[in-house]
Length: 282
Image (cartoon, rainbow, N blue to C red; front, side):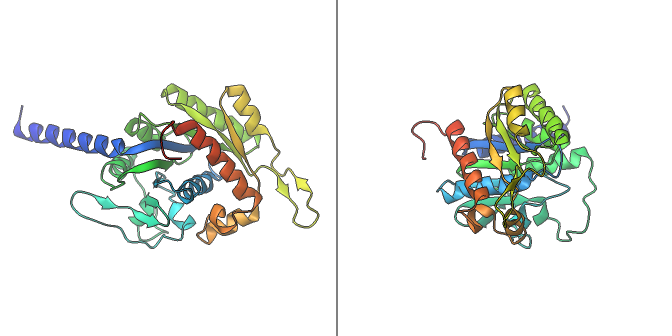
């Protein structure tokens, strides 16, 4: 074996050990996915992560969407500057105990597209898991881009012992069709499906208080029954969710008494019940 080959093998082994050590310090890994874009997956991921942190858990939120990293905007930290050394990168801290990592922190011009092929994206995601100083976490929430391409497959391979995936959908038939593919994707990878969240489910008129099903309602629950996976809950369509996200304060903090915030917390209740083992904090 050539010297260069030996060096390369040792480097790979060192990186693998570093990856395993990082993952061993994280109790629960939850992957948020969707079959298509536009279903509010990042909104669901950010509210779940913050709701967990507000309950006293140490939480990491990894934005695995290389081409459209939206998580920093939802916490108003898009201008945050990363710090680190040759060994590791410090994630951005959002009070009370949420650590965030995103490609948005590495690309200062938000209008500049990231034009990368698969290997470059896979390398970046591996760094997010291996080189970010996540420390001891109760939960790592991973926000995937939609679909079943390079990034979801890479994350699933990097974190094979994840507690499972949460599939986010809206009630429209096209979204439900793709959510079924996401469940099939998880099952092919032998990864548990923690459940389906139906987002934008019903809208209550602020004037007459009548509920209107703009995008239908109940499709996510029906899909969960059909696919034999848990149904984690419905998040109502509420303009305040959009406004709070744009202002950098997820709805679970901005308006904790709102129906949407209560719905998110009910999802978190079920997530905790599905992942936290007896004797753990919680």
